[in-house]
Length: 452
Image (cartoon, rainbow, N blue to C red; front, side, top):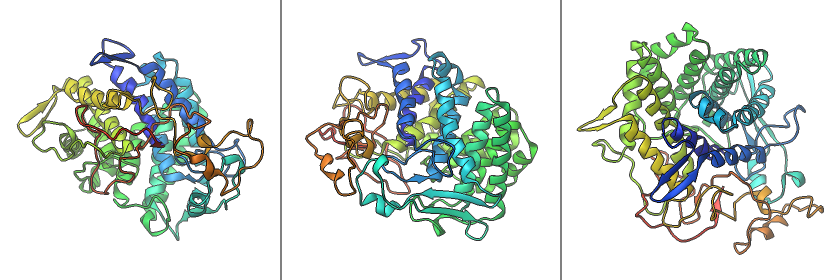
């Protein structure tokens, strides 16, 4: 679900451009204002139910009918991060209120899932049964199994990410609804205490979205957001005393959050908190691992395999860090013998975003509804099955599979969705590496069926 962030990155790209919300590249013009609106519209399409009724609400995961709090919270945190870093650009496109609504829809659900100081519901629905059925959310009759973490069965990663989401959203919504913002902050602190006091990995109690990187990254990430939200010295002391946890990484994802925490804390370093120098060093090592031309490059572009969620989330870090360097009057970072200015880092992000929006060998946008050529067959239940307005009869568990024909477009266009990748591209990524999308001169398989 977090792949939709690419259009928020569009606003990041416009943040210091002279050409506003449209960027011309290789003769192509991309309307980022349009992309931003479509991106936020995507989140409306992922909504579940009407609030407030028990654990109804929140967002469905990808094209499924299951709700997973951990990746959902990660999405909310990144939406809030974009709102914090690029508020002016998003507001100038008249989309800030829509973004606030998308954030609040997620935080409302997290609040309801945190039912006691030591309880957080982390899943609604049964992933195994859901994956065996292809039916609309309105028709689903698979078990709505609930899973939770407690002091006896902890999952620090999920609790800490939920804490980060609430803290980040609290910062975003402070001027909009101060009472709600205060509530978010209070609940964020409760979740952080739960995650930190009852440490235990989520991999020990989950069937889906299990942890591979441990919980230290999420604890640093949530403490960083708690400090950023109100400048409480308690959380600054926490990240300083635990900076030994920070490590060099080449991935930023829902499971491995180190790079995000490092970027946040590096900004505090440049703001005068020199005791955070390790985070600055680690953040720049992350950038050096991604930048083409770097002597410490670890991630290489590839001609036929990618997972766009890793691309867009990594680009979010690069965009935010480029802005930090510029506003701090830093001329760039050193990667061995190579030096990269803020504008060079942003240019690389632009190349990735432009590729996704159509500057690629297929000359095809990977955002549904954007451009003249875009994916028409998402791996998405609600998109692929006719709506209840045109097909009021129930579509049973096994009946919906007939709508997965590769020859027909989806009857419902899920505008704003960023597909995971064309079918020729890999669906999963090796845990210890990410794959950036290929450079334009490389060739992709000419197929249009895509996965959301």
